[in-house]
Length: 246
Image 1 (cartoon, rainbow, N blue to C red):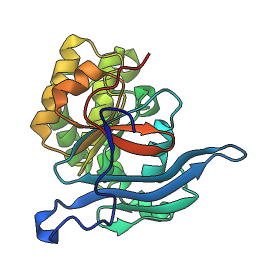
Image 2: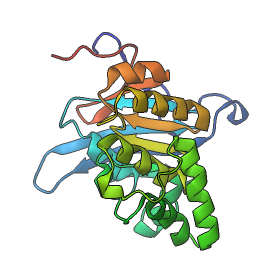
Image 3: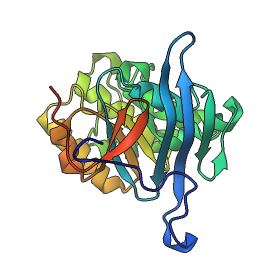
């Protein structure tokens, strides 16, 4: 095994002492295999655990399967083998994932995949309205989220006219508007300037939510105090230090 790396010491289901002493598992993947048709496995016997209070950074070389892993985790891709549990229940079918996706707090790498309404307020209200909230409640949530993001006054802004960094923050806001139990952020610092990066870092600390960040932005990740994982050869391993890739 390479220097600075170790295999995950507590795979899903392993005995790690009295249950009362262990944080609750929020998302667990055990023995996951996945391959696209006619191709070699992207994920092979992969184990992953996100626990209450967990702060995790996942990195890996381009093409190693990070996006595929997120697709499997969210139930958007069906694994060839293995088990997925989310918030205390095994999830197998689309209906199983549909009820928990809003609580998983997933934010796409490309904000344009997540923002499709005419205005920022409409984008932020879309999720709550879909979850059965009244328009008044959804509008209140939108205002609260804008305040949390430091984007007061942005509600009437046309989403497509925002800068790349502003779109990324609003995309995060659409997840926060659903009151998630976790955050799963795919390359969240892309297009963010220095001020927006610092705001995101502050938000992660203020929100006090367990999170998984998929990123190559090592300077940012070092400031988060995350547990560092690497996806390599279809499996996840824990790193003691940031890799020095060529």
